[in-house]
Amino acid sequence: MRNAYGVESVRAAEREVMARGPEGALMRRAAAGLAAECAQLLGKVYGARIALLVGSGDNGGDALYAGAKLAGRGAGVTAVLLAPERTHAGGLAALRAAGGTVVDGSEDRAEGVVARARLVVDGIVGIGGRGGLRERAARLVAAVAGDALVVAVDVPSGVDADTGEVHGEAVRADVTVTFGAYKPGLLIDPGREYAGAVRLVDIGLELASGERVLEALQYADVAGLLPRPSGESDKYRRGVVGVVAGSARYPGAAVLCVAGALRGGAGAVRYVGPAADAVIARFPETLVSAGPPSKAGRVQAWVVGPGLGDDGERLRDVVAADVPVLIDADGLRLAGEREVRARRAPTLLTPHAGEAAALLGVSREEVESARLSAVRELAGRYGATVLLKGSTTLVASGEGPVRVNPTGTPWLATAGSGDVLSGLAGSLLAAGLDARDAGAVGAYLHGLAARHASSGGPVAAQDVADAIPAAWRDVRRTD
Ligand SMILES: NC(=O)C1=CN([C@@H]2O[C@H](COP(=O)(O)OP(=O)(O)OC[C@H]3O[C@@H](n4cnc5c(N)ncnc54)[C@H](OP(=O)(O)O)[C@@H]3O)[C@@H](O)[C@H]2O)[C@@H](O)CC1
Ligand SMILES: [K+]
Image (cartoon, rainbow, N blue to C red; front, side, top):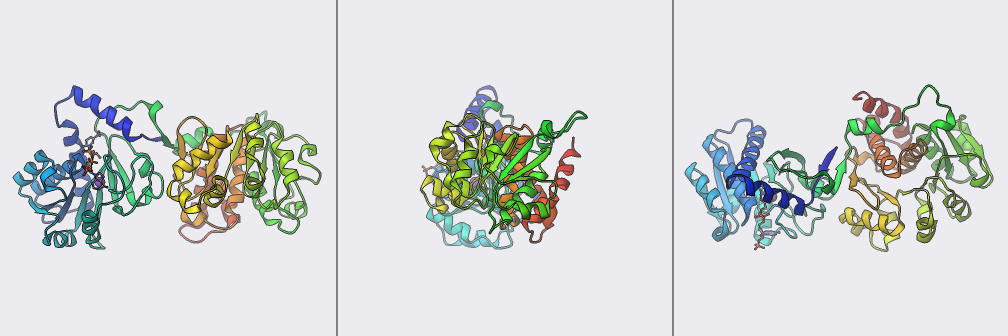
């Protein structure tokens, strides 16, 4: 599991270590890790031209000490000071002693220094930052050459470390070297995109796992959660998932949802609705019926919503069921907050940003720019688990850390891919995973399947469904 911690927890852990150890030890460890990463990126340090963008706090101090190390190895290092009178004094002295030079960020030549650098170190602001880049910093960042390497210290300046929100301008890094713990803002878009590749440097902070605010499942975690049929399994023990989706006129959503459900580990898929002919034609193993879902026979979990149109009656029938229910697409529009809250069995809602925006009464842009608060707000309002789809899919329940999916790919933004995900996650619910695990494991496999199917090119929803077994095998191999 990859865990991320909020700024307050990181600061508290820092205070504890500082109370025990010698002054400046943490910053020296951080700077050593930062310098090592810069050296590795450069390949050859000797003679390399490096610009340090140095703000008023300890983030700038890290950059200066790392710059001193690189200058000691023969790099040409220049520090550009954004707040000369408040620069970290020890760091500045170390850089000067190692042969580095210094310019005031308000001088005309500062932009030229930045523009000529092969590597730019962003030590403008770290976890003490608020809001986007200020004007002078933004001007200097705009001067960075297109082919220069940009390394952010701890957090790309302008990105909110706790949320990944970006208000105004921010640094776009190739690599972010972060200290002590991942910060949520490095793993959630838009911040994640600004961070580039994230490297964690251990500086000896001890963080209690109960304080993590965000977690990302890794291969081994997913392998441990995947359902495993035993020798005794029959279809009911493995779980039957019911799918209420599609319409006679638009059967595609039903077919794709069933395609996902068949690959999610449940023992059988029951389809209820008017697209039964199309479903059977494609997947003859599906059990189909046309009446109300509650009369369809035994199921261990329902998926309702994709392509459902305005069929509120079937939706209400499913929502009244006493088994786990996944609500997606049209179902989200039709399901009342009160009905969902009143359910006793688990509920998993799977909106994309546009659907989440409609439920919250805000714009799509607002959801996309503040994904963490949007998913938490929805989970709270509905008393449900919510999977917010997108470039960084998030899964939130009322309590516990939010899960962020690390396997997404932009190619997944394709028609029908959400229908496959809802079938897949519903199948995992039927197989016995709780709503948070079903959502997170479903998103993980779905992303991995899309990568398999795409290999860097466009991908259709059916291809994603077809690649789920390969993704599953991939994960199991690490078992
Ligand atoms: N915690 C740890 O374990 C360790 C932490 N370490 C390092 O320390 C860093 C935190 O240092 P920090 O506390 O000095 O804050 P930091 O981020 O440098 O900001 C300083 C000042 O910047 C200003 N400012 C605010 N917003 C701004 C903006 N948008 N644009 C421009 N300026 C802005 C604001 O001052 P203001 O100008 O508003 O008075 C604020 O007070 C951390 O990220 C890591 O790198 C490691 O060395 C070792 C272990
Ligand atoms: K920074």
